[in-house]
Image (cartoon, rainbow, N blue to C red):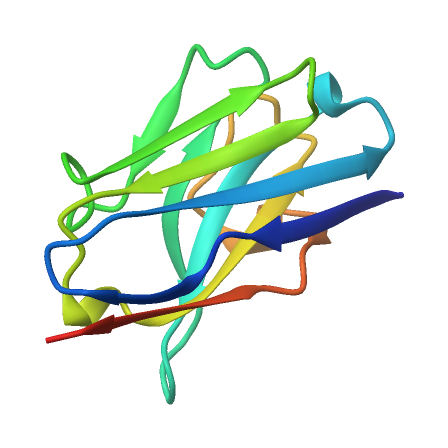
Length: 124
């Protein structure tokens, strides 16, 4: 089992920044690629970004590329999502997830473990 706990969400004005963190515990962190997903009210959960076990591969949703950066610190068993130039359409609950597919994946079905989510609200 892997336990994931997100933090860092909040309310920010458009154009602002937030950094989300996701702390993992349980099985060795390096065994997993990590992903961030988000779910806006009334919408399906969507892929945001993923990072391979060794940070060698990263993938982004088109609409966040260039604004968001995913990173990980394996010594701290933590994955981050730095979000800059936030827009109202980025408002959602953000979830981190872990997959045994060590290069990462855009597909939520590939992820075995999920955090409880953290709310990000961007005001216009």
